[in-house]
Length: 334
Length: 271
Ligand SMILES: Nc1ncnc2c1ncn2[C@@H]1O[C@H](COP(=O)(O)OP(=O)(O)O)[C@@H](O)[C@H]1O
Ligand SMILES: [Mg+2]
Image (cartoon, rainbow over all chains, first blue to last red; front, side, top):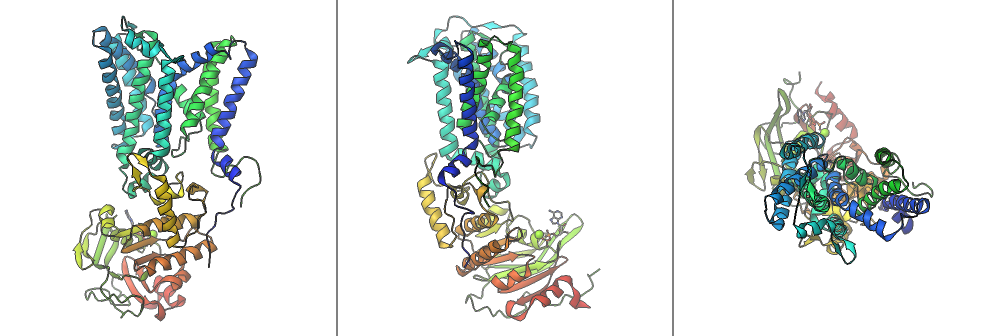
């Protein structure tokens, strides 16, 4: 009788390391960054600065959580920066017309979801590569934002309730940070213990298999772009509430930061593999590097170079080192 | 060029299985599935040119033939992936017309593909319950799925120690066993396997073959497509040979041997 056993029964600790290699490595990198900037500057490791980092990272975090879902399905959403700019501009315009701010928030969230779903429809039901659809979206949405504002920044006045979302504090925490944390927790729960999260991973891991077992594969693929649009709307509200204005030039290069955060967090661009904890750590790392370089009085332009280099490095590690057989140290399994 | 040649065994017209069955395995004499005069053309290419086939409960039918003989096409017609241009499919005595794989599954027909049925990044439990997750509201009911998965695998004597291991960490044999266990857990009447062992190591093939025997013992009509002829003698009760889109022979396993099969497959006996 032939019996099935695991190839080798590894030590549980080795299994743990193997399965969480990517999260552990980004966590390590994050700590290295913190230690580095704490040593190099006197101001980095202060309560004020940390809160500042978290506040600034919140919009990226919110969208990066949604982007993780998109990339898990094997897709990408390049339009997030333009989407944030458009909704940011529309929110300012509508608020200037005197529409009550809670209504504006709901309307913007719905708008973001609808625009995202339109892109998702092209990707999923029409089979156009996500890269192309959202690249077109990047151009179209930014174009609409420019057209609506004619390139001017539109001020938002006298809506303290709205401003609280971007500037307020609750229990000593910036409100955007609280929102970001809540979104991250929601993302974590969705991906690890819900049926929807399982479907997202399944579709990204093996679309054909997911279809064969009767999953609504097309709808699942389309839906992640809706979630992304929704998250962009939330980020747009955070940004306009903090800056007190709406501008078509908001969130330039935002998509790059978001994708860098997700990829740095170990999510595979091929789909199927990724974690929310990785994305949170990736986002914080990007934010810390940006902040730390400024505190070190290094040219802000340098941040862009570093962000780009990090993307390249992360993808390189992702494809070359963290393959299926990767293990931390130790001998090879046979 | 072979159109004018007569196939060895009479396959057209009569609709009777050419040989009296002597498997002794199942008493059932009504086929679970009957195919009559199945034709399928892709463009101008005749993939199937009138095939008759019966599948009986508790019996394993080996489907062999050279590359492009039409084995996969025939199996896809049974599993609803392709719709035949002509011919009838009878399921438990009723003529059916599948509009797609979903409908075939509802008719209790399952198919295991070589390597297309698992999600690498999902654990063993998740794959066994793929597409029919047990839930509490929107949440996965992990505890219950693990219990059920354990039962599912135990009943087929498949040993996988860690059900929460990602499938990508498993060997080819274990992966194929999971795919078969999942198909079997739908309580199918017919289970079709298209080259389930072609990518496996020797020991793994053994395990999959004994797994096929256990599935068969449950009264499932199994169709096994394989190029490994020696495997057929381990699990099959009957063998159908295909040649250029027709069924040229059907043999009870006791009445044939390797040499005979090879001749039938390459078409030598016709000279
Ligand atoms: N979807 C398809 N479109 C066009 N031709 C096909 C398709 N599927 C199979 N064929 C053709 O039908 C013939 C039989 O193929 P197949 O059933 O896959 O053979 P086998 O599985 O016995 O090797 C081959 O010549 C193949 O090229
Ligand atoms: Mg084939």
